[in-house]
Length: 305
Image 1 (cartoon, rainbow, N blue to C red):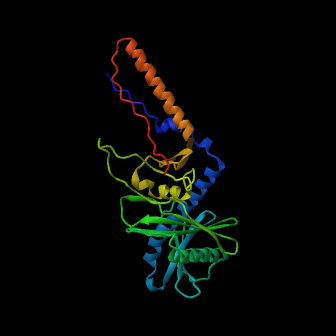
Image 2 (cartoon, one colour):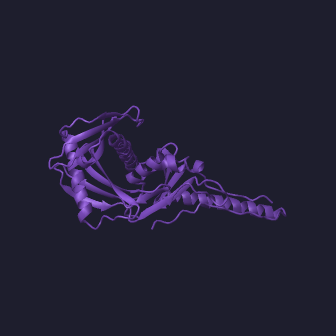
Image 3 (cartoon, one colour):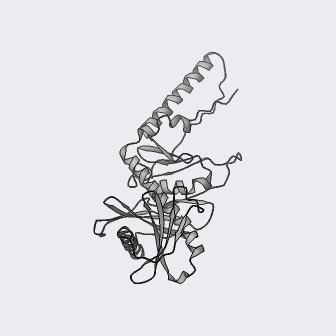
C-alpha cells in the first residue's frame, strides 16, 4: 500500500501570508532591513577601506548608516577628538565596482556625531556590564541606528568561522534625544548557532531551519533575526527559517526576504483537521476491507522555552 504522507507545507502556510502581518511585525521587519543595510555597508566598506588606507595604526573604529538611498561606512581616527578618515559609499546593490571611496579627513556631521557618541556609550556598557556575554569564535558587532527621534544601538553576535549562522546573544540599548542611555536589554536569552552546508540522512540539502523564542523575547521574529537571515541567506541556501513563539509561527522566506506570520491556533487547527481527515479515510478503508498501512507525519514545532 502507498504511504500516506501529510505535511503542512510551506506553500500551505503562506496562504495566510503577508496580509496577516500586524503593525508590530511590519515595523520589526523594516528595522531588520535597516540593520542589514548597515552591516552590508560595514562588511564591504571595511574591505574597501583597508585596501586603500595604509596607516592602520591610526584607525579608531567605524560605523555605518543610511543617508537617503546611500549606505555609508565611516572610519574615524584614534584621536581624543576623532575625525573621519574615510567614507565608503554604496548604492543598494553593494557592488564594490560602483562604490565610492573618499579618504578626505573631515569632521563628523551632526548625525555622525550622534552615531559615534551612542556607539561609544554602548561599547562602554559592553565592557563594564556582565549582561553582555562573549563566546569563543565570535565577535560582538555594534550597529548604531537613528530613525526619526529614536536612537538605538543593536549588538549582534557574529561568527568568526565559516559554515555557521548565529542567532541570539543579541542586545538592544536605547538612548534619549540627548544621547543618554535609557534602557538596555538582552533580546534572546541564549546563543543559537546553526551550521549550514550539511545534508539530511537522505542526502538532500537542508532547506529549512528554526529556533524558538521565550515569551520575554517576543511573539515575533526580531530585527536581529531578520538582519542575520538576510546577511547569511545567500550562503546557507535555506529556503525558509521558522521562529516559534507562544502565539505565532513566524516563517521567513530566505529567497524573497518576506515574513509570514501564522497564529499557533491556526497551525493546531490545520493539524487537527488533517488528522481527522486521515482517521476518517482509514475507517472508510477498513469498512471496504482495505488494510491500512499509513504513516502520518505532522509538523512538530518546539514549544517556546
